[in-house]
Image (cartoon, rainbow, N blue to C red; front, side, top):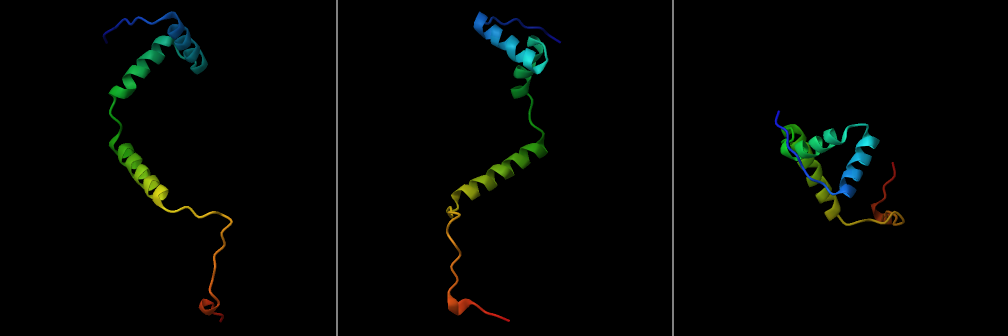
Length: 82
C-alpha cells in the first residue's frame, strides 16, 4: 500500500479528529475511507435497486396529491346493494 501526505488547515484537522473520535476510528482511517468510498464502484444489484427506487419515487411525486380531508364521493346511482 502506498502512503500519501495531505496538508489541512488546523480547523479542518480538529474537525477530522472530532468526527473520527465520535465514530471511534482514527483520523487516518476516516480520511482513507472518505477517499476510497467514491473510488469504489457500487455493487451492480445495489445500483439497479437504487435506480428502481428513484424511478418509483419520481413517478409518485408526479401524481396529483389528494388531501386527506377529501372524501370519496359516490354517486347514488352507482351504489349497489346485495
